[in-house]
Amino acid sequence: MLTPGQTHDVQGFGPLFRMIGERVEAFLADRGYDADAIREQIAAAGVEAVIPAKSNRRNPVPHDPTKYRWRNLVERLFNKLKNWRRVATRYDKTKESYLGFVALASIKLWIPFVHEA
Image (cartoon, rainbow, N blue to C red):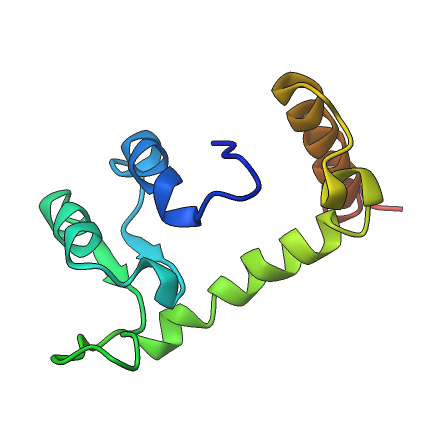
């Protein structure tokens, strides 16, 4: 799901969760996703919400810190993708060409893990 660069990630949550909600057991996200509406949608799908509570939440919701550590892998992937200037700055004019290059960059990162020398 590609959203405009100035859009908050929460705007893309609904469409993304509808695509993956039936295939996941736990939804790992950062504090930016700590909203009651999001937690309700995740719970309605029978998925575990692994989202740390915001510091200003009146009734903090506990999360599994062990599972939350797996989110680090996703963050490192995005960091590696942003090493390509074209991905980090979104040089491509169309959604299709941008996502196409993200796919190519992801494949280049993935190949060393599946190909034995």
